[in-house]
Image (tube, helix red, strand yellow):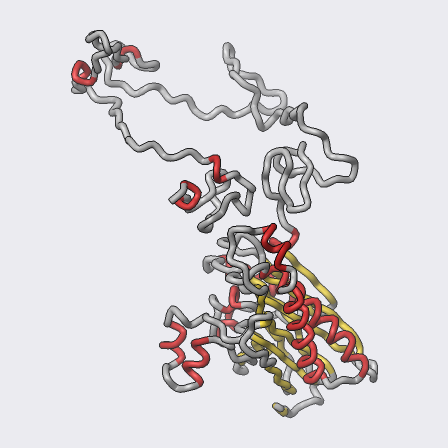
Length: 436
């Protein structure tokens, strides 16, 4: 096995690596240049008085013993031997107006106080071109890497936030993934009667598929555009959601035909169809409509926390199938290592596209939490989600989305995390409820 396969983390930035990585996805470190580790592990003990120094000497080719540095020869020791070298404290650059100790001259300028010397052999980027954030000299290529030092540049999708009226969303790469494969789309429009309609779409790219980040982005944008086209025309929100999922699936399917560019981008990866999951919510005309394919979820959390919250979606997953067939309890199913294997997704290789939609008419105000499993893995039950989200979520949806993402990161951040918070207001005179 090659050295790159043996590395668990990047030597440059300590980002976790995956088998087959030739470059670090976080900083662009060339993993093929990492030297093989030494096979021997010599140990030298310092600071003892009973070392058998003559025995440590090795004879050279002429039979003469090789010179050995005795303790008295070591810097910072006295004639008695057995003293460890004196350790100088870390150098701290004097501030403005401060004087250096007399007789002290640092061997090199303090890197914190000196601008890096530009490499005169590196061609300066043209005006308006993107400059590397690491070396500040090289041009950034179309793949997001510096042509001078090779560092990966911060990706725009590593952390995204959007606030659109009352609906807000936050997406984060997490702590273990090399990139953010989630995506979301928010929008507002009006129904034919002039009443507002609010849309939140969240998609989670399937990591085992090719180009999952492109799949989630294409699905979120296509579903959002479909809803923006259908709702103003008077299409029932539930029917509009169904059509939006079909449009998202078609957008993801179209990515499967571009296999040549995929092979150029990642020749070592097994090629299969791009895929993602989708969950969306629409607030329109007093109705709350959700739609989904896969295991991304939507939760209902009332403003009055004395009222029970609810999960509005059912996963397309192995665990959900076991529970539905009464073969296992929910606790047993989700404890199984196969629990999160999805049985439904958007992609050309999906078994059968089965969009799920549901329509609700809440009798009180609350918020809808639309999220990927990167969040609900750390707050699975509706009661857990209600405890994590702040009580003033309806008034501060962006802050609430940030809190939820932070909860997932504090829990380990093993996956990308995306969450949208959509407030749903009910007028006091609108008492009563109906679930369709």
